[in-house]
Image (cartoon, rainbow, N blue to C red; front, side, top):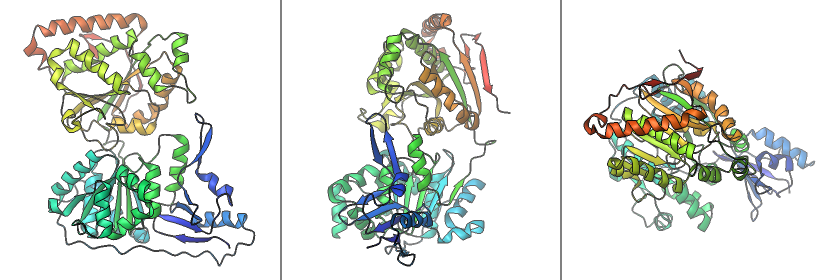
Length: 537
């Protein structure tokens, strides 16, 4: 029997398909893992029991058909059928927005999401990609869209803490009550909904994490996720930070057929190059809007502080792996490296001196504890004002309120909104990803803020990472500067930091209330040579 194509609003399903029948089609979704020396699939799913191949709806259906014609010489053009289906969804009662869009950009994004004005031709589309910079109001636009369409919706996020932020924002933006919003957690609550015995069958908006859906599907099957959406009569599906949890998002799309799906993200791409290739295929025919203003949006200054940890050949060798740099081994190396600790003392003294809240990115929990111990030893008065915002935190929400926050790019990554940050400091977490660069730059939301990156020029990999990210900061940062610390100066500036710390400890009231306008790149009233690789006008 020849395979037949069925299209849903978020998937292309090929029935009567045997895996391996069309290698050139399957190859589009293969990724080679050099560490494990094996090929993996991403962005497609094969149901062996029912002989169904699931592909993203964003692909060209004609491309899929041509591939099938090559695989099946007897393929008949009349056999494939386009069966667009969508389970019934619920209309909600009228929701009043407490205020309108705050600027032209939000207004434009809303028109796009509602298919109004010049975007009216998209009204027959079912998938939409909304790419707005951090802080531009993606949450408001999504909430306003759901309210104006008056269709029951679900919001899917990567972290449970972000769900709580969505709940607060929805209540702030609309006249909805807390009882109109339901956070779905745990398999028992989902089982009650599917069985019809739950009291949460008539909410306006549902909030759920990727991990909750994935955990339930691993036990009961992805078909049951589709039944969950049908039982709740979901009409709109919203992914927050859609570039994250990509594999999980694919499976949700394959098995849930809703009226409209909105993909929200400030960075519509994947960190890994081979994964980004598949992500691009996935979104190929999905209408998208990107509203970044290079003249008005940048508000954070980027400063690269370059030094040399002076590694031995054995250190360089121990920090290598199949991908180039073993992050864990490199961070462990830094934790016993004298030059790194002297540079840390210099940077911490600098940001503490100028005032404001600071987010430090450090790659491992072990390293985070060592950094915390260092701060407490030198600045015991801050012991209760250091927050560890990772999986080891007992109360992450409380930890994020501290003045000095120690975290990882995973814990304080996309979607996180930490109020009042003046500095983001990439201290001991090497990465070259353009996506991560944009995300970490987006953690500081206010004007007159700074992003400081400590760059180790002693390793070829970290030097290349720095070069790879320059174009991102040139575009999205307010200005970009490079500060080089020669080997012979490291001990000198660390000593200056020590002496200044001792001096200020004698004048507690003065150093606890530093002038907010103190220049960042002047240390102890001594100017240090600064090299600008691009200065924005």
